[in-house]
Image (cartoon, rainbow, N blue to C red; front, side, top):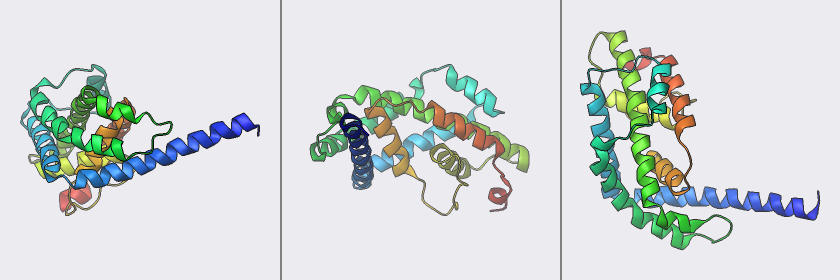
Length: 214
């Protein structure tokens, strides 16, 4: 390996190490702000409630992907998204001040409130589409209206970890991980669509029987 190639490899490794450290610190900072967690919880509650009260259900992963590809806005929830952004920006500034300034452009973190808001509007819509598919499947399987808390739990778990079986319904909702993803991807302009597509596939094939028994 040449000197230049070694330097490039070390640089990429350093970037990854700093990103991992930043994600861990962001997770801790989010946990230190109960109002921010409450705002995210309210956003998710409202988003799923709108899905369950809608007469239009997503009936397949393919349909969900088509809806997301239309790239429609989520103006109905813009005020709640903005509340989360306002509460999150000071945390991002704290994160930026404490970061080691190397190759990761931390200045973006404090100048990307618009990007973060856009990511959150897209993200809550992704959660809603996943939730609509799960609600449709739960109602078809049980013959009863879908439990909002169950839809929330399954939607968030699959959205964050589509390859992992959702955890016990007695656990707290993974709101910190959800916000951490949106803030980090928003600050760096990273796309969430690929992960949402995988989550829709997982929602279509998830065995719902254990959750209905619970």
